Length: 427
Image (cartoon, rainbow, N blue to C red; front, side, top):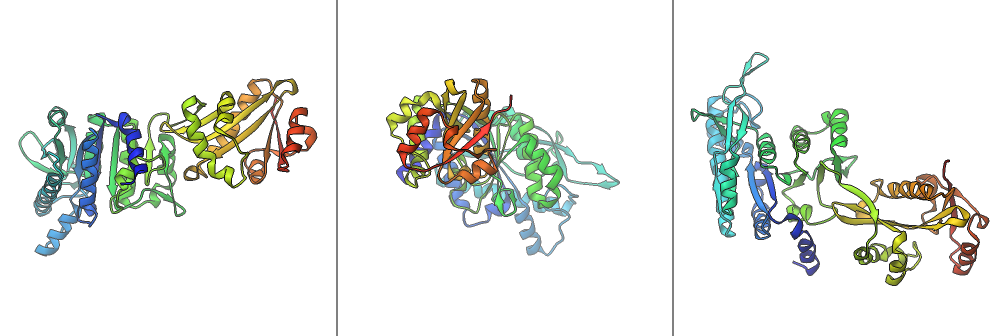
């Protein structure tokens, strides 16, 4: 592990220590080559005092057993009809996978226990069809799980449930994981499958608010594969019921779990329940982050060079854009009260968060702030981003006369020949 990776993890430790993550692992991941690496990543979480509950699937194991025994399967996912032979296969496959997880965690000195924490009842008869041994989660035995967690034991929950008479039912692992996360008030529910997350036009959608997830399901949910749609639906429900973050990551990708949790940009898709993004005034502790953020842009002559002392001296003019408490963008707003205008300065968004509307949000924030301070127009100087300001930011090309007098002399002395851009602020 590189020192920079370790520092990144350490930065999250205080936030995640003693919090609970529910990991929902698809069976396709359990049979993949990266499975052992995933278990190592889980051991890293435990070493950081992050509590973990594992819910796993069984469909790959069911299909494998069915092929070996040359028998038909009535349902693989725990959502359709489960006949008696399929239930037997499901129980055998679930036990095998639970043992594999136990075995792998034991190798990393992580204590774990397979549980019967899912209380289920029959799914019943729907539209005239008897779903036989398919079950629906009735409740989660949270007292049992909390006892294990208090002792530092990782609960492993197979995709089967039991009723009060000891009958066994096949349940869907996505639903089970969601119910566990909601019941235990988990900080995160993480779906680990063979998908990177939800892609739009070939580009990964890094994050959804609850409202955006609802709209996506309504407008484009039918375009998703059944397993991705299931995860988005259950993830949305979890967020609506108090789970702060739901993640969808690719368990075939090495270090995906750690990369999603311990980095600003993540590697998959996230649904967030509470206010995730915010613009706030910069603080002294942000100066180093701002300097690191703009370093490459300054080197490329996109932004005016600024020293650390320059930023410190002008700190009252700076605002930062946070994602999950991490600064990913900044902007400066310098007031010229006598001329009733303000300058938008040092607008920059990290490369990992480009094309997500952050730059536009900072421009609109600056306009609102300037207007509240009595300004009638906002101006910006740009050598390379003037198209963006015009096409996305509502600015038009201005002239030297549009600048305050002392800014005119500084403009000419700089020799940068920046494009002058102006945006009038509505009354």
